[in-house]
Length: 214
View 1: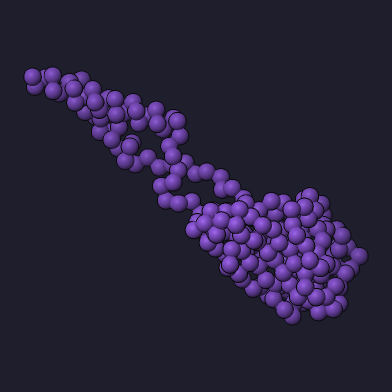
View 2: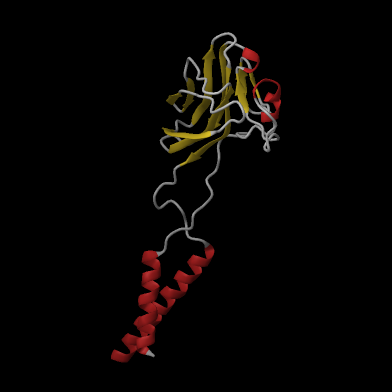
């Protein structure tokens, strides 16, 4: 029996040392990043809309299987000048965040934008050269970069196009998530219960050992 208690005590100690917190779903600070409710929660400048791929059938696209999916499109109708999309977010100062989004274009095959597509968040930014994959479908390409929160930040996407620019940049699935700090997660109630049982058994083993030596 004494040996069994020692084994249980060792197991309890191993559980306490090797326990790792379960993964938790990251909270997306950007709202309506999939544009399924149009441009709600976004501030717009210029010719930015929230169409579906089927809306491009008259000019540069046949019907799509995913024609009900909405996204944000820049430069619709050949509009020139500055076109931008932005949203204010509340984050934690000093924490690290990642901005993720899918980027593509509708246009004739192989056309590229003369000026870069600009993405910015929390003082960090990236420029992208957007090229249309073909005139039958838009292939979205996943993009991301990290930034440091300031307590209140802005997420923005913009492009300055020439008049009658023959390419429309499209963006979808925007998210802003925090990188989890090491050791930040707390044990689940079930894990607490297992550890408490283990510590109790370890304590019982120590008390029995002291009694046996007395």
